[in-house]
Length: 309
Image 1 (spheres, rainbow, N blue to C red):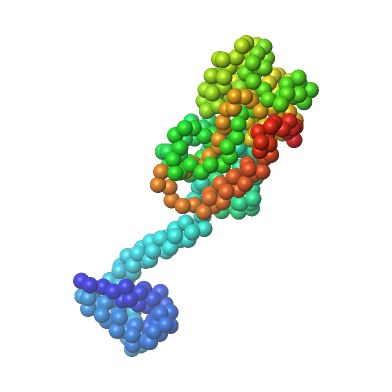
Image 2 (cartoon, rainbow, N blue to C red; image 1 turned 180 degrees about the vertical axis):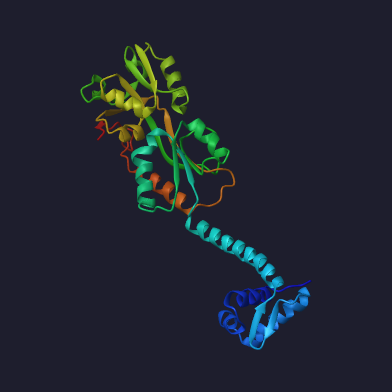
């Protein structure tokens, strides 16, 4: 049995409109063309679908049963078309993002506000986690995008957002605020506010402290953003990066840490991830916002002592 789409369409229109004339108008063809399509369908199926009473067609019980199946087919096609439209406009698609604390506010928050704004048709899930967890979630395609600190294993999916160096953050009246650089020796006897052991900065910082002439008096481990807030409350000296210092808006003086400890931020995507244009725009905007942060050193390497907002 060989059926054509046009025959099924003619049958459906006759059943929906109740006659050849209306079906022909709906299909933009002549009445004889519809009659021929219905006749060919009946011959192909070896079923009588309509009782012909003059110009009127009355559906047989077989036609009613067939119409139920045809409607299921067209309902499925309508659902496919709607799904395609949803994909095009990102409707009913949940975008999942993981980010480290220091990039959430104001950078990612501002980018999402500017790009998505008042759109209510785009569900979002935004988790604040450590870089290691975000990497694992992205690699397992459980996040559509991740915003992380850099680590040595980089690949083509990692978009560089900003490369910086670790800095010391102190209250403006702290003695270290008058220095052009801060070394590990300068931190001896101080309470240090340092990133936790999951931070890529931590290994390099531990190595630097191990070569110092003296040891810190005590250590508080927390996120770099929390380090800045504790430092603003006079709790100690924050070891962080300029992104975190700027995000905290804690009024800290910023001094370059020597030897230099690189801090890099990246946006990452899952392996083989499909293209999501709105995510690309968010990544680009975060990149712009991060690169607007003034550097802690001039291009010739001399330190710039400044106070965060």
